Length: 477
Image (tube, rainbow, N blue to C red; front, side, top):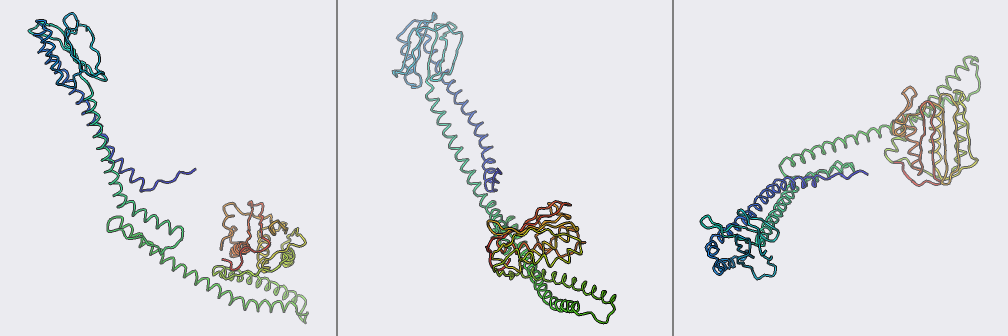
């Protein structure tokens, strides 16, 4: 399944947010890591300093084994709420005197500790442990153990992280605000231009114009876009006027040419029906042959002019249907009789399979055109090989099939042969490329279809499907 294209608005917003947050987030990460490390180091340093000071003040009491004085020194730690417990141990590691806060969560002091060689400060989950030797004038009298709560450290870290989080949210808000500002300044005008282009593509209405968006680069783009639309609109109107002039000319020329051709054909047919005169037999045969050629060529010209007239009517929407009860079988047989002489001259056989009576509400003269065009094309492109024709009833109406064994049509050409002035064969076959176009328009006006199945050098099969009664009545457009 194809993925939906991401709009320029979304891409621009994402790029601005990323471009803003990436450096800000990186900077905040470095600053946070450094500050958190400094906060932890400050806690460790201050705890070690407490241990050093208490050890200095406790040295004389330990030297004289004065527990009361040593206890008073440790009790002085009650002024610092972060110190949760402390104890002095003699050189044998036995507890000499201790101090503990009254909170129930205070960890128990060990009754004895191993002799430490020097100062040691460690950070644990709930407290900082400070071990400091008690030394006076080079003589060691014991060891001090101090436990300092990390609650203050955690509180500072939480407050710092909250500040950093608020700062990050502020950066995000600023990035989004900047993205929205750029969206209003850049992507919104571009999307408006894209919407105008989409409307023109859907409606082919080149009179639409983009709204003015100022004097910046996008404004210049919109002005250039509008000038281009104005140029296209003007040229389209000129082209439409030229097409209208052409169609009017075709209509007038067809009418004007049809009148003398009709008269000329009637004169030729009249001469053909005259009884033999005193003209010698060879001259009479030559005259008759000449008149027959004239009659056929006039008929061909009459057909070409009729096609041009129909094309002009279709373009103007003035080719109307007049549906009446029509026997398609009888109509096809009549058209076949009209082609008997042409089939004989081309030594071409027409095999027909026609149901006795296929009746529907159709425009008989227009269906006559369709059948005539299909049989004429089969003779023209069939190369003298047999042609197959069938007429049959269907559940919806009727089906007409004309199949030849001629040059065929390539798959690339099959989709366009029903277009106006389109041809799949070379110009040596003659014709204006209008017969199939008109036939397709007539079939569509009846609510039916015309299709082709063909293989080059094998032949073509044209199928016309017609409903029992026209679905589309009125003008062919």
